[in-house]
Image (cartoon, rainbow, N blue to C red; front, side, top):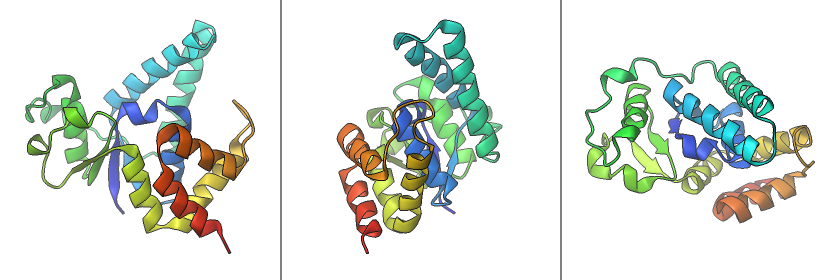
Length: 194
């Protein structure tokens, strides 16, 4: 199964994270990350919630719960031992070294990130591509459109628990409008047509 490391910046936007993780849950690909990625995500998720008016203690609890759910839902996603490779890539931002180290050690074929400029191709192992989430979503949805549609249906079924209730069409519209996933959405919609 294809493996991809999801960078913190693609896990932070809630709907995008939920879609990418739902694709993984449907077996379209195997998501991986490091403890460093999850620590960053927990910190930024708590900050996002407090900026939206959630009390600090509740925001920290909800962010910790998110990380705990990710750990339990994807028990084999944590890459350990990446620290020995950190600092060996010469990236423009040394704080991103852990991402490449975990991707290489975890056998990832891709790093999914919004920070493309921070991962220049000449510094990344040749077995790893660096993709923005929209391109990654298109590739994965194209490989298994019915599973991608199931992922969207599952998101719709779970919606309403911590936000507005959404139909599968609402979720697809959101992925297109907010995250620029028009091509992936088109593939998924085509799979849903009789």
